[in-house]
Image (cartoon, rainbow, N blue to C red; front, side, top):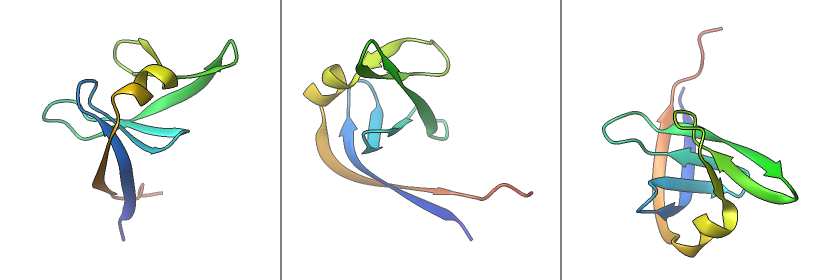
Length: 79
């Protein structure tokens, strides 16, 4: 039984897909998609990419979003 996650919006330059405003996924080249941490900083919504630690604001991300449906299938953890 796999978990099915549907990405509704995608930013092609940043390679980030949004499931909803609190759940974002980073599509690194040739790797499995990684869930991005969403955080509130000074009253604004930001996303932090795990490798670089760079903060990307929701406003910046929203400017380049296109409507695209991507489906991610994840296997559940064994425990």
